[in-house]
Amino acid sequence: MSFFKKIFSRKNDDVKADVQKQQEKSGQDLSFHIPGKQLPTPEDVMDLEDIWDVYQQERIRGKQQGFIPVLIYGNEDLLDTLQEEFKNGTAHLPLSPVADGKVWLHEQYQAYFSEDPEREHTLFSSDGRTSQGLHRFLSLQTALRFRKEMPLYLVEIPTVNPWEVFAWLPFGGWNDCPDSEDMMAVFQYWYEKYGAVPACIGSDTLECIVSKPVSEADAIALAKEQYAFCSDIVEQGMGSISALAEELKQSTIWYFWWD
Image (cartoon, rainbow, N blue to C red; front, side):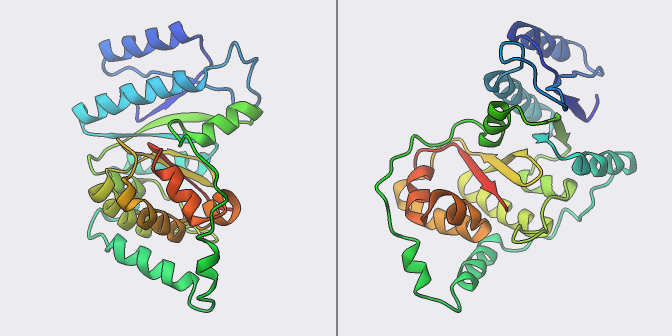
């Protein structure tokens, strides 16, 4: 079976029919596609729920067959690297050992405020906003809404350990975005503590899925860790760590974006 699936614009019934055919015919490709140049009219494009349904079915199949499905959009460099790795039969990074992600997050958080300790307090103010949380991939919602150029692929990463996704996908390492080794460390920790699984990767975005929102008791601690991992989601997004914590208490999707 091909290690990637390219997602094409189809009507809902056509998409579901193709998924069923793929399950019945092992060894053949399933190709979907959202056009890379310009999205067609809304009634003709594969909508977010179609993509979500396909992803969820692949998660089930991945658990049965031993792979992690990851959506990749707008990032041809990742696909080029992945194809070369599959040709060679090896990931670009060793699968072990993995550093301590909890320690890395703590040190990163402390480093942000080492020169200006008072600044941390400003990030805990709240504007009283409420959130229904994230339950679908925000980056794909945005791309579909604005009809951005978006070649979209569903790749099968040959591992049962979600953090090893980053051993195969060389994502990160620019500006404040953690490099692949640090991604592996953080996501091993987050998987073991929260069950977080990398699910959707763009050119500068990363989203993961969890089975349930974080508890009230863990929300602030997790929000601080996510700020350490990706400060832009607070500095240029939620506005405060407190607001991020409130969103995490409602969310089954975690969203990260680096400027």
